[in-house]
Length: 302
Image (cartoon, rainbow, N blue to C red; front, side):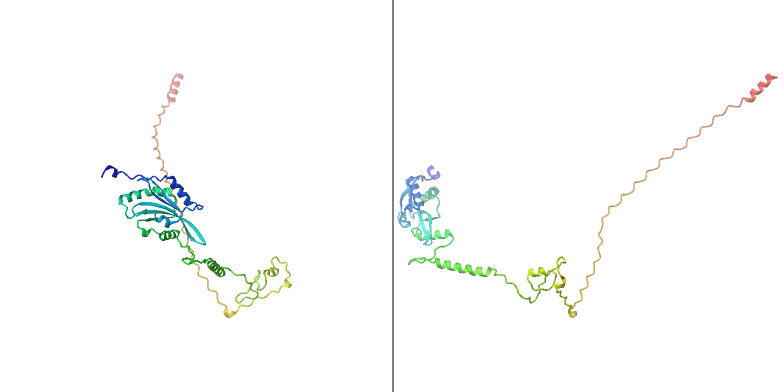
């Protein structure tokens, strides 16, 4: 391998003004142009080879078995009730193209796709049998998620929109009849299993306004005009003894958490009693000198 074969493939130049003009015409509903054929001009540049208004069948003959090229077409789908415009990006790699040319062609595809812009579906083919209008329409239907064809066929078009509207209206009315609540019907007589009562608990069959007239809420009605019905005595045979009340469960004494009393403080130790001091011997009194003095005085007197 030489150095040139190890270099990465360069992006293709898709800045041809004619290509941009053809793509803009296809996207414009006011122009008849509905396809453009994109081919190589050299090894790393593409241009608009041709354009026209004959649809896919017209551009299909321009794709050769020994070349790689692209196409961009506008397709109208739907029926007379709904017409929709779709854009298709065509990628063709002829069955007689070599492996190196196909590799370079695949590397150039992102640049051409960016020049074309947004589209609904992409059709890639390397066999003429797969490069058909039927394949394009099938891809468009599957990309839409549903088939909206309401009855188109080879013999002509027969609209079924009237039947569709009639069926929808019929289904709506049936569902409304099943789910809608009818008008309120008031009971005009005594009920079979229950008897209405007024606010005072008296049996009655009367509208609420009459019930309010016959109710003494503040004690101001003339009791003589109100016929009070005595309650019917209960049938003794149907009276049942009340069930004994269940025995009361002994109350569970609530355990109280009592903090322990603090221990009494230790009594202070008694102070030691000091030992009594030893008594000092009493000083001896001097002997009385009075008798001696008296004797001396007597001697002088003699």
